[in-house]
Structures are given as C-alpha cells and as structure tokens.
Image (cartoon, rainbow, N blue to C red; front, side, top):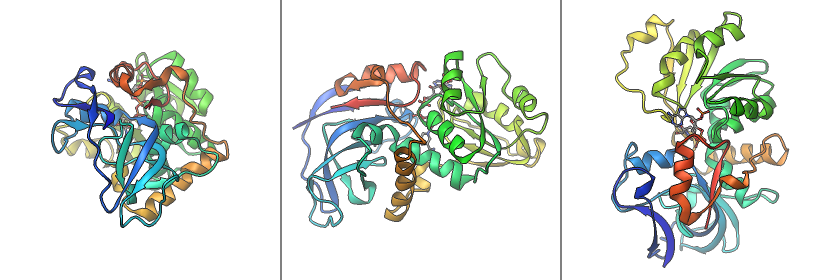
Length: 327
Ligand code: NDP
C-alpha cells in the first residue's frame, strides 16, 4: 500500500482525499518511481474539476514528479533501480508516494538538478521551451506578449525570454506580481486587473503591436490578445485559467487582420524519447547555466496530504512561480 491523493467525483479542492492505494508491480514497459518531489500544475485543477476528462473514477491526480527508480518492468532497458529521474507527462497519479510510469515518459536527472527543481520545472519548463522555440521562434529583440507572467510557466518564460535577448511583455494580476515578473526578466508588465491589455500593448510598442501572443488565461483575455496582434500575427492559446475559449466565429480572425490561431499542448511536441531528451536537455541546460532559476519558496511547498490546500492557494491566485507537494 502507498499513500496517494485521489478523487471519486469532480469538483473543488474538497473532493481530493489522502488515501491508501494498492500499487501494482510495474508492467513490462514501466518504471516504479519513489517520488521525492511532486509538481503541481494548473492542469491538475482542470482534471479535478472535470474540464479535462479522466478515463474512470476514482482516479489519481497529477502527472509530474522527480525521484528514484525502485523497480523496473522486464522490457525496460534505459533505467536501473537507484537512478535519479523525473517525469512530466506520466499517467494520472503522480500525487503519490510511489508511481508507475512508462519508460518513454521518464528522463534521467543530471547531477546538479535537485528533485525539487525538476518537479517544479519539468512540465512548465518544457512547455516554455516548445512555445518560445517551436510553436513560434522568438528572436533577439523581438517584443511579444505572454499572459500570467508571474505564474509557474510565466516566471520560467520571463527568464527564458531574457536569455534569448527578447522583450517579453508579461501580464499579471497584481503590483507585487509585476515586480516579480520584472525581476525575473520581463521587459514590461501590464496589470490586467487595472489596465487595458491591448491599449497598453499599443502604447508600449508605439502602435506596432506584436507578432505573437501566448495566452494561458483563456476566456477572459481572448479578445484582448487578438487585439494585441499585428496583421497576420499568431495567437497561441495554451490554457484556460479563467475558463476555456469556446464558440469562436472564425470570421473574427479576418476582422482583426487575417490572424492565425493555434491551441498546442506539450503532448503535441514531446511524443517520444528523442523529443523528451531534446526538450528536457534544453531545460536542464538553462537551469544548470543559471539562466533559469526554479527554486520554490517554502510557503509554496506543501505536504502531499495537504493537496486540498495547495489547490485552493493556486486557484485563489495567491502563488508566484511553481508549487510542490512533498510525500
Ligand atoms: P500558474 O502558476 O500560472 O497559475 C495560473 C495563473 O493564471 C494564476 O496565478 C493567475 O495569475 C492567472 N489567472 C488569470 N486569470 C485567472 C483566473 N480567473 N483564475 C485563476 N487564475 C487566473 O499555473 P501553471 O504555471 O501551472 O500554468 C499556467 C497556465 O499554462 C495554465 O493555464 C495551464 O493550463 C497552462 N499550461 C499549458 C500547457 C500546454 O502545453 N498547453 C502546459 C502547462 C501549462 P495572476 O494572478 O497574475 O492573474
């Protein structure tokens, strides 16, 4: 038996329970990992609430952690018990003391990257990698807009943008978060609680606007994001923190200048060993070179049994950067 967080119905943080779970021996292609730090992602709240579907209930939660290999299935070739590893796209159930993960989703952890750093940055950092390098290639001195810049994904994006020599305009929900995003490398910030996003983007860019907007806030920023784009610009809609964008009349893309829209996820960019090795190496290189700091403040490190509290804090927009659970 291991302890894990599970939920039997969809709903708010209160549906999460700390329960005993009868973990099976790993399947032939699986690795059994003792989790030392578990990543909390906003996506986990969508799974818990029912916005993203689950195969069956009761279900485990979470897809990301870092730890030590304890057992391997008979067909596993790249890992041995004792190896330090991380996974960002595991099967649901990472909010657990121990978890079984298919080999193709597991990466070795280099010396110098701690379990906490890996769990705080795996999913979020590889997301920033594909967004800024693959979905659209951000160039030196390029000005672009990135929403929720003081969040987990956002603070990594601020630092990565600075490392690329780009000028990121980051949106945030408070003056304190604006300071944090700037300190991390955002070129300019916009407080979307008090300022008009598109107007400020026009002002900052002296009327030019931007080639690309990265929007994980969703419903509440959709129109402002489109209005911040130059003619034929690219809208990258990659999340739903304020609710999903639905019911779009494609004509709006014509009205606002022949815009492009994509709705990507990490699952569309990291699909095999080669892509995982490439994205995780890019992230680890950024951490090891000191260009991206992913240390988590103590008040955002929660005990596994306190997952309810961790989700409440995240959804109340009280966090900056990443949050962790410790088994
Ligand atoms: P964050 O730490 O960024 O938390 C979400 C942030 O969104 C909040 O802190 C808040 O910042 C902002 N926000 C804006 N409107 C709302 C609202 N109505 N309710 C709650 N929060 C709001 O989370 P993550 O770093 O884990 O993820 C960031 C986003 O990226 C999420 O939308 C997630 O789904 C998406 N994502 C997408 C991936 C992909 O590949 N498609 C992969 C990973 C994450 P503020 O107070 O400053 O407004």
